[in-house]
Structure formats: C-alpha cells, structure tokens
Amino acid sequence: MALTQDHTYRAERIWTPRTPLDPGLRRRFHGPIQPMDQPTLLERIFGHR
Image (cartoon, rainbow, N blue to C red; front, side, top):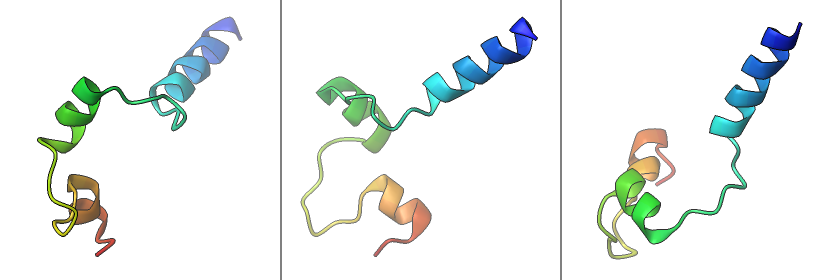
C-alpha cells in the first residue's frame, strides 16, 4: 500500500503543471528563446499552430 502511494506521489510530482519554470529550465525544455512568430517546441509537437 505504501509503495503504491509513493509511486503515485512521485508520478504526480514529475508531471505537476504548477511547477514554476526558471529561465534555465525553460531553455532546457524549449531551447533558446524564439521570436513570437515561430512555433515553440511544444506547439510543433502538439500542432497548436
């Protein structure tokens, strides 16, 4: 039981959307800051444009 709860907790922590992104993390996830007219990495992956 405790093992399942720990696994669930860790999975939720990894994918928590409310985690504030500092500039270093943003650069690692999205690459260098791009002009606004270029789609971001996530937009390219999910096709938001």
